[in-house]
Image (cartoon, rainbow, N blue to C red; front, side, top):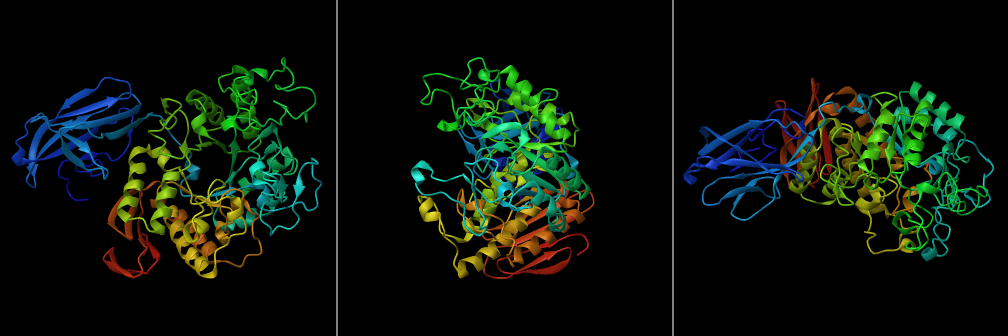
Length: 606
């Protein structure tokens, strides 16, 4: 990066070190001011949320390239989110941050730079770094036990695995949405462990597997019981043990903001006898829920869905049930789980997440706590408060939707400049321990499958009837394969841990829920994506540049990116060429031709 006119926090000549700071870590900031302005004593104005600002007078040092240089060094003893800009104290001029991160001169108020300060003891699991996550929607991966009986009469079994999930007959009343089951189970995952290991997977993230009365299982019915159509608690322990032998950890989905109305705890539908908070005012679970005639259904529910009554996470008995000694977290961790992903983490109080962290880490600092957050998690506001869950006492990391959006949009046509800015913003704002354990992905159960998003028609404004059965034509599919490979190349080489959504490796298609949740196409002969993913996984294992290496954008063009990862012993250069023309690049004193609509990765032993 060339010397900026005033300041750019991503330029090491302006700010050292790059990015977020560990509590008490010194930082040096340099400001460049054109000499003709005659500025003598600029000050840095810095403040933390809800605190009074502090001013740091900057010392003048030797000029550089026609600019006066001013410097200041300080450290911050408290964790939190800080903001700063520069006051030149001449003609009321100040330097604020523009949309590209550069400084600009203004006499009006403007945007400030962000500085994240995280806990000095913040560490995250080392086993994830350099590894590969794999997300499994349990009912749709593989049916290991054939012809098993349905545990409840209101479930619909789908023997034909090639059909799309039900959503009809009446979409407005949801019809059979979430009532059909394809039979995927824990035994099926156990049988496919060799397949996952060969693909390069080191950690499985399961969507919910506890007993629940919908195929997505986000309406938990019993937190201490595997859904009987998936298997038993003993099957889970067996799976964890065999996965561990294969070098694969298992992460569970923790849905702790709400339960199902059809559950042991609420029991609106009377499936669980005469007890439950809905039917018994004296139920031990009654205090978990908020009953009031002010709610349309008589109780507070998640986003108004009466099948999902919200819990009060501040209720002592609920918190003890989840986080206490011998609670839900302890139970599944002792069975072999390596951590939890927290559903809708934004809707859980920070101190509840901190208690969950304590429960997870009781089983070892190498256990993982991931949160579902869709935006920049460092500066997120929710329910009127600034969230602190990524400062070292809460989450280890989050689902990295900003990277997903940046990568898919670049591959689809967004400018390289915009893409690089979005990526570097996350790298700058996130604490390093979190950055290197982020879950990076391009498809999930909550999004369109990546190949459909990249090569298909937009689904915006279209209902499920329009989405149903809609497939890419041959030309779109072939183009989608090219784009999908390029997108995964980026996801595998950016900071964080790449995650493959089951079936993406065979280019499965699908618009939004439930069409993105089809049964894995085990008959697919498509190898072009799978072969690349294997190679990328091997590359991550062989080079420490990808485990926790720094990221530097070396060349950014409209349709081309060249970035470098630098690890303790390895360096990797990544070239992404979205253009229709080949690109001749120089690296390590050699010339490299990057194919049109292609990518190249160069490591030390090239």
